[in-house]
Image (cartoon, rainbow over all chains, first blue to last red; front, side, top):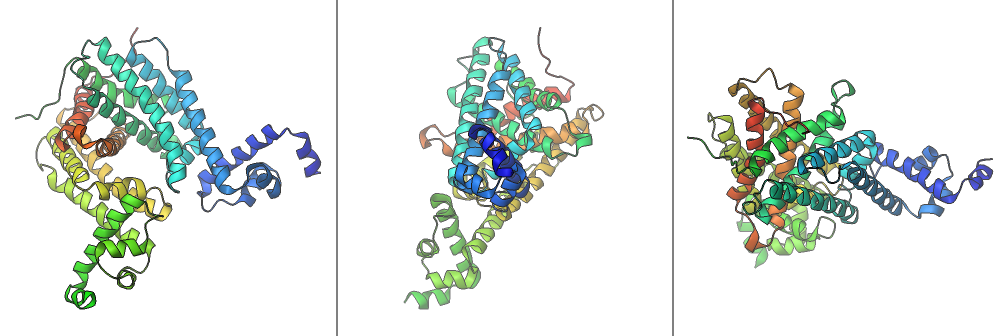
Length: 216
Length: 216
């Protein structure tokens, strides 16, 4: 019966179901402990079918990382208010980021923890996604500097450093928010506001020439 | 001759030499590709001696992570100007952090990349170090809030979120700084200043009640 049913489902749909099951299983069990048996069971298909479609646990994990990374980048890009002032673009992008990581905690766990914890080939996939998001933030901070007319004062190196700081802060905050018990977990908007207060209330004065200096 | 010489070196000193060689080899080759042969060669000892002292590649890697994590935490703690206002404590702590990660790029690569990329037992060691540093930052931000008299306004959750953002930003900046070509690499003090400008020029107004708000 199972076999008859699986023949009716198009391959592309079946593959997505297997990947959904894999995300859940990798996030909860960890990459090493996750078995193809369990993934097949969660997906409601036979183990040979998983191997037939996705070859091996390594290839399934790679496919899952690529899919989840693409979904996260797409969510951030879709959320950004194009054409708005830089702070609003950042605010909308951060809301998109934290909404996506909150709604897909298993996908985020796979990207942020599992993919970076099981060897270079997987970690490199995540590094590529991170580089794409960082480039986007570099563009935003550069635009903010131009808007504030302080283009000259912020060197390329400073903008690059600030962007890496912001991306690291966002990743760390998403992990922190998802790890909190449900009754004290901030909403995606609240987490985005925490980071805007940290980053923009700071980046804002910075663009206007403010610098922190050691006091007396 | 080598054997005669190695008998003259106390075991504790020998172990440190092996761990120095291991840090260098793990950071440059990656955990998986690093061989005990190469580590022994770099340390200038025989491979059986490495196994005799440190049992296995896994145990050697664990020992290296514990040693490097303890050294980093100790460097930060030693750098902090105890009793100073919170922003100076943070500034001195950040300088200690970035000085240590710049002076020990291999140790930092092992902690930040290798240890998180090769399975849960190693990643958990780093998570413990991170938790210790985050607790320290939570204490600092809490102290800054009290100094600014806004203890009531910043909830525990906000302080915790800001601290995780700051730690994530610092980790990301250290990785960024070490990855830059030597001729454009900022000094530890410059990197610390980038983060102070990002975090404190932001956290400072935040403590005085400033909040970022979406504009019209």
